[in-house]
Amino acid sequence: MITTLTIRQAISEDTESILRIYNQGIEDRIATLETETKDYSYMETWFKDHQGRFSVMVAEREGEVIGWASLNPYSHRCAYNGVADLSVYIDRSFRGQGVGSSLLESLHKVAKENSFYKIILFTFPFNQGGQGLYQKMGYRQVGVFEKQGIMDGQFIDVMIMEKLI
Image 1 (tube, rainbow, N blue to C red):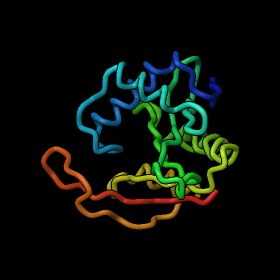
Image 2: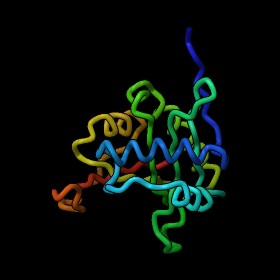
Image 3: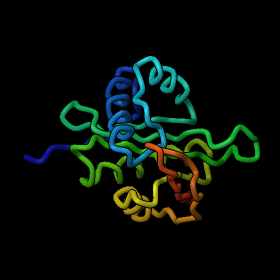
Image 4: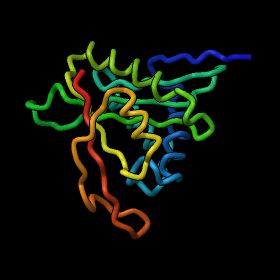
């Protein structure tokens, strides 16, 4: 049986699922320099900060949230008002199945509706799955910050990608 994937605006009741998926990304060490998992209070505050222009979309299958993507502030400077930073996290059981593409298609529409003209993202050079998704969705590599952070005692490079929308 083929199940339908639904992409929709996140609601506060999704916070626990968003947290679970985000913590998987932290634990798997493939998507963020964060090394400590977050608690519900952290994610509740994060969700409240992601209303209006800085939207969160979720992917839902059979009533279960299996991924999310958000537009995040890039800079507090007004010159960058039309630039958003991007986050995408997919439940580890559903990675590589097109969930990220569906989320990004929807998020790109939301970004345009909210007067963004550019989306940037930061990814690890070794995250081939993420880079494949971003390239497929029209993002281009801008450069690499060498030794941008430390994770598990090792320096980590961070690749910058962008898409004009």
